[in-house]
Length: 156
Image (cartoon, rainbow, N blue to C red; front, side):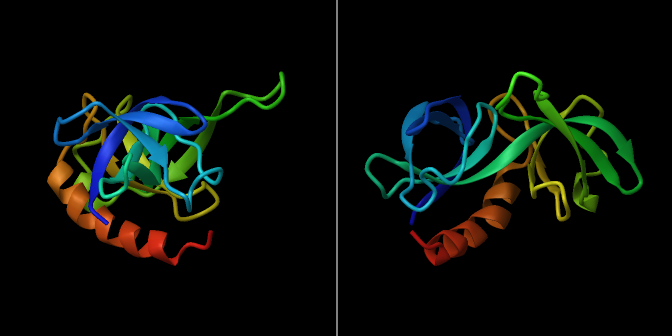
């Protein structure tokens, strides 16, 4: 696998248009076989793409959300969700851990990338910036080795 991080700019059920964090792109990427119909990517989400696949394939996704408030324990995020019924809300609020190295970089109103489902373990992994991420080299080094292992271990 040759993985790179990218930000989705447009998404369809079978593929996404993404801009790589290193500023190259945009490119079209299909969903990898092991995540097809298992994940949903929205514009603004951070994704890992495998460039050895032809066409390149999305193999992992981190949600993006907007910081609503900061506290000593972390942040409160709002994330857009799919409305499945007319009375469903378009957003959910999630409490997330904010790692020490990101404190001072995150402000109310900032867009951040995060992992977790809100029940527990929701953690901010990076700060979004103009179709990229603040400190993208750190994100590549921290996130991609785990993605490669997790993707290989997936069934499907």
